[in-house]
Length: 324
Image 1 (cartoon, rainbow, N blue to C red):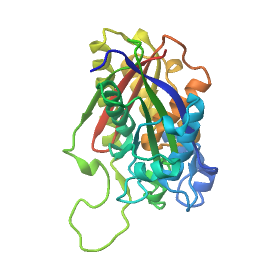
Image 2 (image 1 turned 90 degrees about the vertical axis):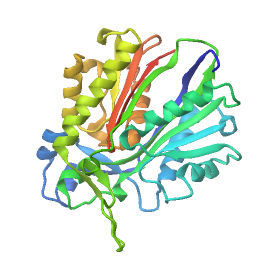
Image 3 (image 1 turned 45 degrees about the horizontal axis):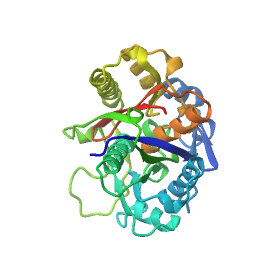
């Protein structure tokens, strides 16, 4: 492996223009703005048009990330898309995004690790950039059209999710001890029925599959595993909670984020939240939140930033970044 580091050269995000508010949702399902806000902290979410696919959302976020990095499309030599809502089973959304960007002969593939997928993708891209081969610049995208797998009659899930995409441009640098320093990732597939999309039993009929979730189990497990991941990351890198300048968690539920911060012993003024206006966008949530935090100067040079996520599978992860 080469000496040096992988830095976040540029960030970008894209939120569809259509906004679905809690008041509008209350006309579709038995709920209210107060009920949703109290239980989730969400007031609105963005919904893609019917003609917009996952790769279209990814394209917009990718272009914004390239602009932020002051790079051209042809500078990218590695492309990874994290998604649970691909345009189709195959080709991958990464391959479709590659074509839309005009890239050719660039390794491109999808990752499915649900809401933790973006952190999984960062880990893969980081190692590929550092392994001494020819990769120099990676485009990593989290893109989701969750409205396509939401049951709009199920109050327990439809209030949570929105559509969006976020992207990082990663670049190798010979400088050490900056950028992406370490990651802790894990999975436990022993209880898929707690959070899933699709049939758990063989079926001979074609059915429309929606997300299903056991809210209390997800709540409990998410706090436990995200806290464990953060604590392991800190211990492994000889850091304490006071060394964390900014925690950017997966934007799933405000109560989960608040409980996680409390369990770590971190004040909420060091935790970035934007889910009030985005809802849960699965693997797109962390890069979108990161982009907004960066643009609002939420962290500065030399700061330690931790990204942390939990999702269906179950999957979880935490990534440590020292901002250059």
